[in-house]
Length: 120
Image 1 (cartoon, one colour):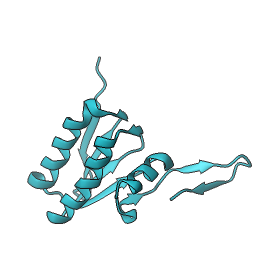
Image 2 (cartoon, helix red, strand yellow):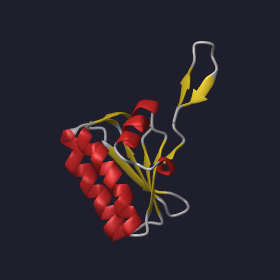
Image 3 (cartoon, rainbow, N blue to C red):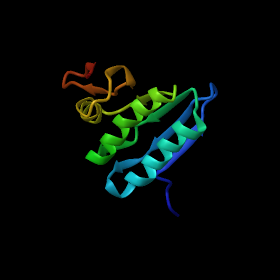
C-alpha cells in the first residue's frame, strides 16, 4: 500500500491545506509545483496553507517553489502561509526569500534543561 506524499483538504474557513510528507526532493518537485500553481491560479482559495509539520528536509528546487508561490499568491490575491516548519526548514525558507510573516507556528526546540524556545 502506497502512502500519499501530499494530502490536500479544504479547511472549515475555506482555506486550502496542503500537507506534504517526508523529504521534499527533486523527484517530487514537479508534482508540488503543479499543485501549488494550479491552486493559486485556478482554485484561488482565500488562503493557501502549507502544513510542513511532516517535512524533514527541502531541496533547493522546492525551496524556490515555496518562495515563489508566496509572490504568485500575492499576484492572485491568495494569502499563502507556511505552517509548523521545523527550525531548520524555517531557516532555509527564510534564506530562500520567504517573508517572515508567512512562516507561522515554527516548531520549538527543546533545551537541555527542559525549557523550550521558539527559533525564528
